[in-house]
Length: 112
Length: 113
Image (cartoon, rainbow over all chains, first blue to last red; front, side, top):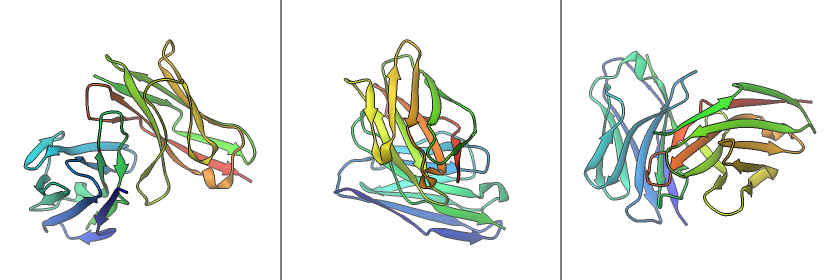
């Protein structure tokens, strides 16, 4: 069966520090991968999605970037965090178009 | 483009009462529709989905939803609320020709004893 792993679960980082959040999927190949952010009162915001290795689409211009170095690995990064980067970050994957997304357990990021 | 509107950001129900969460969508092509549940500090979990076929779909935890094309709606119901149903619920739409899922703003459900 397919599983999705996301870590760390919580993270407290100072303003200006770098960020790296990792997501991996097991039990499937060539998944579509997504990064979402959930900020208080702002719902689910799609940040990046990827349909293949090295293929990244950005939905929102911001302080973050994403990479997909391997088929089932998706990384969210920042060189310098801002206070506004705080939020709950969710990774997800999907297969066929009729599939829903399967979400990871999320990372709570607090920038102080 | 597609969009989702969830009517009511907060719903409060008594334990044992009907849960009704409203969702309306817009899509230029036939949509796939989903409901997700999120418990505090957890990821989203798929409750149910509509792709094709029967318009009344049953999901986990006793929830069901009915796709009404004429009303562009996909309302979620549960006949009898349980304390464990307290969570946030998201309706989502995915056009049949696109991989991206669009979410509604979410509805927080509280269950009163």
